[in-house]
Image 1 (cartoon, rainbow, N blue to C red):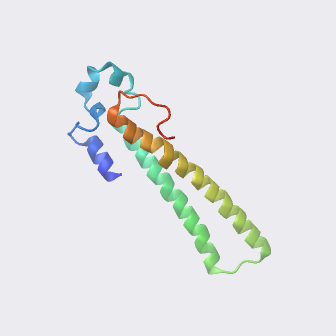
Image 2: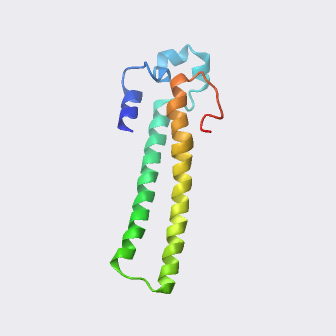
Image 3: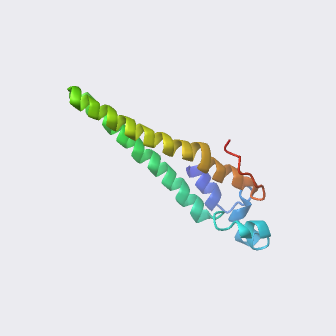
Length: 122
């Protein structure tokens, strides 16, 4: 993540041409896409993604460690399994939407910002 953000915010515009504001002004396609092809959008989306992974991972770890501290009776066990299943399902959805869809689409598709594809993640 740090490397991608350094590339994005660095002065070198070889990989991501849309980071050069002068180039965007003279390119109709990039100018049209500047709503999401901008440094702030990419930084916010990347940080939010990493933050959501971290928070959900911490919650899953906390759930896992809670069972290590004390044995559970049947009712507590059912509640633990339910909570663990719900948080795991939330994590799977968030992780799959970010790793398999939105973040690679943003970082990889924007290398060639003139290319249009709605099926990249597939």
